[in-house]
Amino acid sequence: MDESDYRLGNRAAWVSMLNTCLHRLGADNPSLHHARWTSEREEAIAILRQVCAAHGDSAWDESLHLADIIEKHLWRHLPERAPGEKP
Image 1: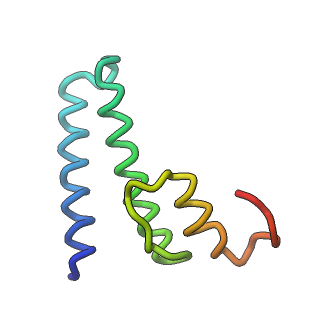
Image 2: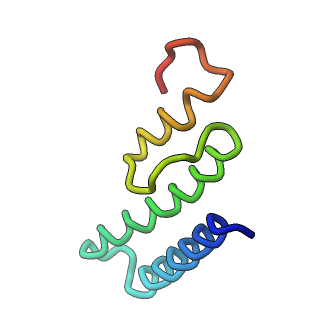
């Protein structure tokens, strides 16, 4: 296991704990909207990290906009797309 695996596992553990807390607090509570988005973004980042590592490049910072991650670090590396085709 290398440092990046450790960081991913650590983040996954925190996201899991946040999701448990949100569930126990009542995830439908409007005041928890930001926390739910934070949790969802963290889960999306974890999946994108895996997909980009397998099919693109994973040399990006977690603060990058999700659309930029998909377009610049995944989409352009996929061979099935037509030249110049946008995501």
